[in-house]
Length: 526
Ligand code: NAP
Image (cartoon, rainbow, N blue to C red; front, side):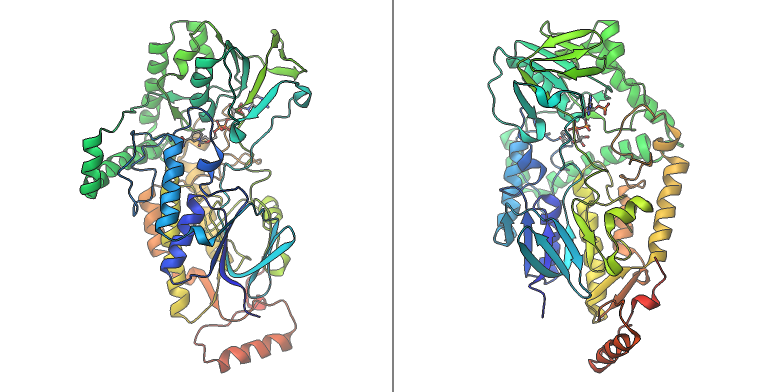
């Protein structure tokens, strides 16, 4: 039986929507987008905490083919990103393809199509795209007694509107989310205690409102906004190249970035002891730095306290450290997301010959050819893969992946094929190239990252999240990767008897296919 859909896409954030737009451009219209939340937008639907905003200039943090002249600020608030997601879905006809409140629990390759399971329901599709995000599995800290706290507990990724006026609030975590949230909480609460395990590099944020005449200009002359985008993207590219990718050659720029952040801290905090506590001891770029104009200053307010000694336990009404106990009413968990334990992949994915993606990644290495395809997983595009995240704006990544999809599907079509799979050899070579770049040039191996606690590193201590190249090189690779890196076939990729193989090959020949017919027996063993 023919599969129900051309493709099932899991995730209705910007990644899943980008993939859907590209597949539609390629003429695949029978798409189903499954989303566990109750609306589209991914991160920008789920995260609603006070202070939420982009920390990449908005002209860059958007699809290049769908500029938005209406951003109110250089760094738009989260609500505008959510609105932008709705606009994109409407314009590209994506909403009717979406089903919300559907949690996919597994997917399995069935010889020539994917079977996707969500609770009681099963969907079949020729292609599977997972766009489940990197930062989508909230992490609850394993602190003794956390579940015994009797007051309100809020994770930043499940924010509930709460009146914090006059409340005593504890915030655990000092990542990019906490940096946005803490100044907002301090405006309401009567006492705020921030529990910091690892400080974060924070730079001033060049954030300004975009005046209405400028917005009108952007609407009338899109190339003006494209010029602003180009400037923003170039600055980010420079930060990424000098701070992370080419640390060996451009260490001095990395040091300047550290000095820039230190000077910012110095301007906002007079107390040298507090400054020392807020200063990271790891190299800039080991972990995601962020921008803020009021984070450091907040700690100088009389009702805000930074606590750097480790949390021993939490009880019914307070938090205990070696320094003593702090009585609180509300516990805010700004503890981030679990990437490597639960999110690679976000659900069980079983490929050819029963290969389990999660187990395979853990037993071998975290890897994906050009950060998008995996050997043993035909017709599968994994958007949130190891080495996929290039540049600082996620839109760079998704647009590279859209380009890769275009080239791949066009080649597959021109061969009259319906099945693609990356070869083991091409995948191995890509992996070795990325590993060499990380080891030889990047801050991850040459800088001091051991105390950063960065989610860029997996559980084996390898920095396998970011693609260690420029975005220019990532785009070039997406446009021109050798097509011989893929196997294209028409028939199922079998594990069955030689007689089945012969009959399948005969069927392909009778259908007049000119493409090569592959079987698992012809492939290099995994
Ligand atoms: P995060 O960077 O992973 O930070 C989590 C914080 O919680 C860290 O300070 C961590 O300390 C702390 N923590 C975790 N478990 C703990 C425990 N058991 N005890 C004490 N502290 C604990 O998460 P995030 O702040 O949510 O940010 C995640 C990412 O979201 C950012 O890097 C950024 O990419 C993205 N983000 C983007 C924007 C945007 O505008 N685009 C805004 C916010 C966030 P350790 O560091 O010691 O582990």
